[in-house]
Length: 130
Image (cartoon, rainbow, N blue to C red; front, side):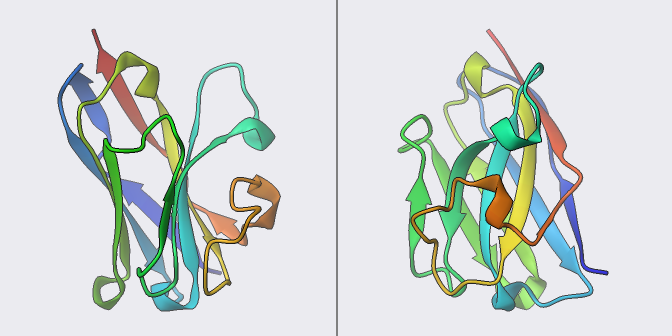
């Protein structure tokens, strides 16, 4: 069974930075386009917010308007690891962040739909205080 293991979450003050990671086990990262989602309390899995998506080779990226210019999605296929560099963090970025894998070459128009993804990580908490 493929697994995705996130790490790197934590607590930071507004304006600070964090990098979170997602390492795939049992499968090759370069078989998947990858996305980051986030979920806040009171919302269920289907209401997770799509944050960013990166194509299988990393040549194409998409960002939600709420994080554009502050977050950067990266991948290192040799290390089987996906990253999300988060700068200028805001309290509204507080959430559990999940990585998700889809066997596409590129991020398709429905990339924000949680139903398209083949498997997910367990999540990592990011807390931003004001």
